[in-house]
Image 1 (cartoon, rainbow, N blue to C red):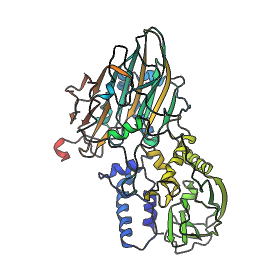
Image 2 (cartoon, helix red, strand yellow):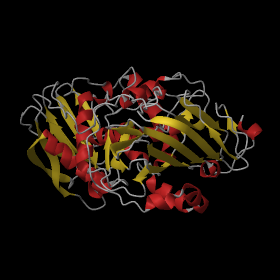
Image 3 (spheres, helix red, strand yellow):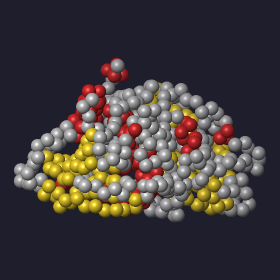
Image 4 (cartoon, helix red, strand yellow):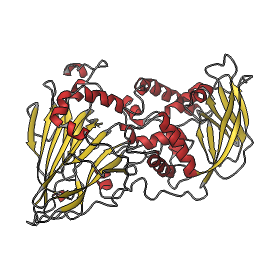
Length: 540
C-alpha cells in the first residue's frame, strides 16, 4: 500500500463539513482506496491528496466544535443580557429519551374560526440555498390545542458572526401560549431544529423557567447520497425539512433493521503487539489472507489491497499504539480465515521489518453488540458535548446507516470498502431533525412562556456564496399564531444583502407576515485569514 493510498484513507475519515469548507464545489471525491495499477485511479488519488492538503489545516478544529462555541459564548456578555440566556442556563440538562412523534399533528382552528396559517404562502426561495444550518423552525404542540393562541418573539444576534472567523448566531426564540378557555390544557410541546450530532449546536428549552421531564430525540438523515453514491448529500431545500416535519422520517431508535444473513459478525483484531526498537514512523502491520471475492468485510484499519481472492488489510503501527484504531476487520458469513500477520517498514508493504509482529484475536459477536462496542470506543476518544445523546442512540443510528452498505437494501458506492470509522463519522455528520419535547399545563385563561436559546452556524448559499439565516414562520406547526416578530442585531459594519426582510437599522424589530412561510437574510461579511474584515472591493 502506497503512502498516497494511506493518505486517501485518512481523507475518507475527515468530517464532510470540513471538506465542504475547503471546497466551493458541491461534488467532491471522498472514498476509501483500492490498490490498483489503473492510471485513472492513481490520478484520483493524486487529486484527493491536493484536496486533503487544502482541507487539513481546518481539520485541527476536530469533529466536535462545541468547545470553541463555549468560548465564543463566554466572550459575549452583552448577548447573554439581550437573550436572557441566564434563564435557559438555569435549566438542568437531562439524559432522558423519547421516540419522535410518528407524524406532525394536523392543524386545528381556534374557536373563532381562524384557518390554519401553515397552509398559506409559497415554498420557494430566491435567496440562495441552505447548507450546514437548517432554518429556524417554529414550536409545535400535540394534544387539544383548541382555544390556544400563540405569539412568537425571535431575536437573532449576529455580532459574533461578523467579528469572528468562526462566529455563530445567537438565538432567542420565545413563545407565549395563551389558553382562552375556561379549563386548563395539558399539551406536549415540541421544538424541532435541524442539525447533526457533530455540529456542536447547543439548544435549550424551558417552560416558565423549567425543563422538568424534557426529552430529546432525533430523526434518520433527511438527505441521501449523490447520484454516483460516492458522497453524502445535505438538505438544500424546503422539501427535505417539510418531509421530515410531516413524520416521513422515523426516529433513529424506531424500526432498527435486522440484516438477514448478517446478524452475527466475526471480529479479527491485532493483539499482543511487538514493536522493535527504532521502529520507523511509517511502519505498518498487515493481515494477509485469501477469501471469496464477494465476502463482505468491514475494516477499522488504514489500508486495503484487493487482488482477486488475495487481500491485504493494514494499519500504521503508530495508530495502534495511540489507540486511534483497533486494528480489526469484521467478517460476515462464518467463514474461518487463515490470516498471516506481517510487519513492514512502510505502507508499500514490500520490505519486511524484523521484530514487528502481533497475534490475532478472533471474537464472534451479534452485529448490534459489535456496533455498540465500536461506538463506545469511538465516543470515549471523541466525547459528545450533548449529554442527552447516549452511545445507545448513536449505535442505533449506525445500524440504520448500515442500510447503505453491502449488507443493506440500498448499497452505495461510498461504502464499497467500508471503514467503520467512516461509517460512524458519517452517522454523526448527517443532517437530521432534532426535537425537544416537554409536557406543559396552561391554566384556564392563563399563559405559559416557552423560551428556546441556541448557538447556530449560519447557512451557506452555494449560488450566492454568502452566509445567512433562514426562518420558517409556520412550517410543520399546528399552533395558531396571532403574531410573530423578529429582531436582528448587527454591528455597525454589518450589512444585509439579498433578503426579504425590511430591516434598515443595525437593530430593528419587524413583524413577520404569517402568510409568508419563510424569511431569509444573507449577511455581507468576508474575512481574511486573520479574521479581519476585507474591504468589499478587495473581495472581488
